Length: 127
Image (tube, rainbow, N blue to C red; front, side, top):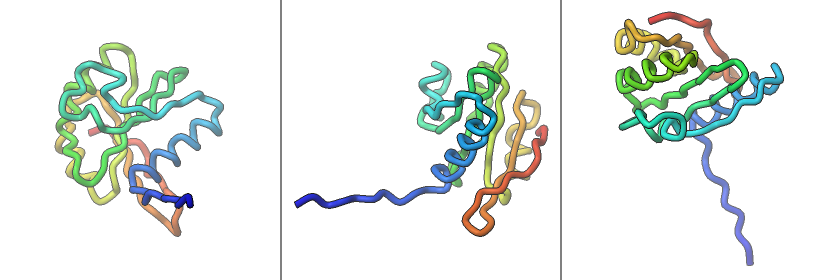
C-alpha cells in the first residue's frame, strides 16, 4: 500500500514560488537554488534559498524568520563584484531590522506579507 506524504509549505516556499511566478510572467528564466551553489563565499548562509535570474543578472534571496540578514554581507559584495543585482526578501515585520543589518551593502530590500493566502510585495528599498 502506498501512502501519500505531503510536506508542509513554509513561508519561504510560498514566497519563493511567488517570486518564480513573477519571473515566469516576465519570460525570464529563473532557477531556485541554495546560495552555496552560486558562490563559494556562502559560508553560514549556504543553505539559504535564492532565485537566480540569469538574463536580468538578479539574485533574489528569501530569508526565513530565523535567518540573520547581516550574514549576507560577504555574499552581497561577492555577487556585486560579479555584476549581479541582489534583492533580499523578508517578512514586512522584519524590514526595519534588516535595513539596519544590511546598511551600506549593495542590495535592495523588499518586504512581503500574506493577504488572503496570496503573497504581496512592498516596493524596493535601499538599506
